[in-house]
Image 1 (cartoon, rainbow, N blue to C red):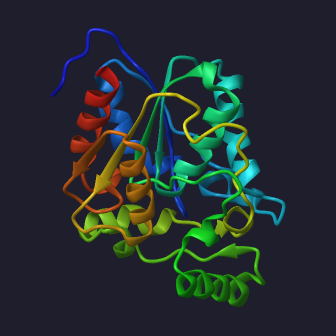
Image 2: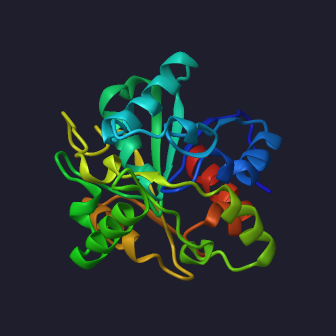
Length: 243
C-alpha cells in the first residue's frame, strides 16, 4: 500500500458499455487511503440507461464530464479516462483545464480534433459494429459484448460485469471530438497500457502517446484492469498522481 500525506481528488471516467459502477473496487481502495473519488456515469449508460437517445453524441459525453466537474465544484482534479473514456476527458481538458491537475489515460482512446471513434477503428470492425447496432436497435445503440472481450475471465468478475453492461449510444462513435487546443491542452498527461492480454482498439492510443513523448506505464492484466486488478490499478493511479 502506498501512503499519502495529502489526499488527491480523482474523477474516474468509464468506457464503452460500462458505467461508473465499474470503478467501484478502485473507488473503495482510493477512498480508504484518504482520497476524494467520484465516478460519474455517461448519459444513456448504467443507471442512466433510461436516458438513451439518438441525440447522445460525443459532445454530450464531454459535457457530462465538464458538468460533473463544475456542478460538484471540483478542482485540482486527477482526471482518469478508461478506454473510450479517454475521449471525453480530452474534451473536458479542452474546456475546463483550470479544474484539472493531471490527465491519466487507462488503456484509453487518444483522439485529435475532428476525429470520430469509428474513424479510428479498422474498417472491418467499424462496419461490423454498425451492422450490429442496426440489426439490434435500428442504429440507436451498440449491443454489449461478452466480458471476455475486455480480458475478464474469472467467473466472479464475469458475474459482476456482464449483468451491468448496457447498450452504448451509437452517436458517440460517429460524431467528432471537437477541440480548440492540442490534445491534453498543456496539462501533464500519463498513459497506462494493459498488456495481458492487450486490447486491440487501444493500440492506436498507445502509439500516439509514445510519439507525443508522454510517460507510459504498464499493467500486466486485461483491458478491464479496474475489475481484474483493482489493487494494482489503484496503486498505479496513486503513484502517478502523487508523483
